[in-house]
Length: 440
Ligand code: PMP
Image 1 (cartoon, rainbow, N blue to C red):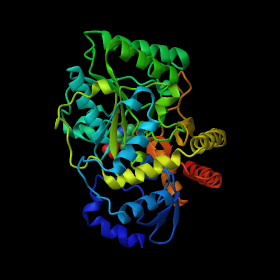
Image 2: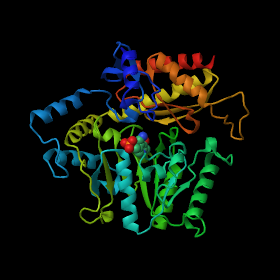
Image 3: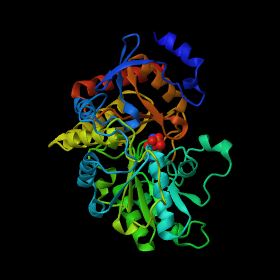
């Protein structure tokens, strides 16, 4: 039973304190959008491996790909040597890359998202000969020393002292919580002018860094889509100043927002694009795509044993092929618009929802305290405690979701992209009941 597993787990390595253990369940099996625990209870999984499971759990195409790979006797590990499977996977990845990146270089890193971000930073430093990298407040890029330095969340950093030198934060356009109370177009202009000024001012400490790294939709930071015009402005500024633009599509990429990449929405092509999570079709995989001109590393300048997990290429290829089927991504858009509309309607039915943000099947619902005073833009203080209660009430109703954002006050929804309309309706029903219960 769950209790048996959890008490056993409490004595063992897998219950180290750093595991948040917010969801007390032992999973027996999983299929599609559903998890079943060892007691036979079903849960609608709207976390889906933090967006990794684009096709949900054990999609037939993914299972088939694993079986075919084993039946064919293909090698499971080849270091970085090529196989026909790797060729086919790379072709498929190229077919979805924006602009010049489709003719650029693909580099396997790995196997985690953080590994690929690390590689991107090292590459940018090598290419430019400069050492500063800037990231944006609220950004999340991983938990290694270098990627944690780029991550906005202070909690995990506090005990560590100095992380990577030469990392600086820039303000991300989050008008809802803009410290200057600037919203809309004026807020975007102000944010762009400020970034441009910092990047050019020799006294700012961030003058002409090697690179800027950003998420086109911040995920862990609370699902904050960058305004289209802001992202286009950042691309123009970085191009003009010779600063490399790295877009981290680890969470928002591979169909999550209803487009292949979240940056497609603004028509922006980065110099380096980081992929992980869903690109491996359920298995660990991380890679970079970059412009051909950036291919400056000497042999062995950046290596790693698990670059290119063959089974991950099989499952990744199957996933990309499924997502590429006609109508698949437009269905993600349709379902996403429907979900967004329903979440906004929910906002009017309960008393604790502030901003509702998202694109495709990546949504964030900010939980706020409306008993407090609102700021100039009408945003109320974040209410993390209530968000935590909502998460627990959701769990009790068989709905798994994650929290994010500052104070953990954003309820995040990342359901598998294959979620059906009736499952979406169930998600809404359970979320509403959980909010009503938590508010009491
Ligand atoms: N970048 C982004 C945008 C992410 O969301 C994550 C993981 N949540 C990472 C990087 C790090 O990936 P990993 O946990 O695989 O190292």
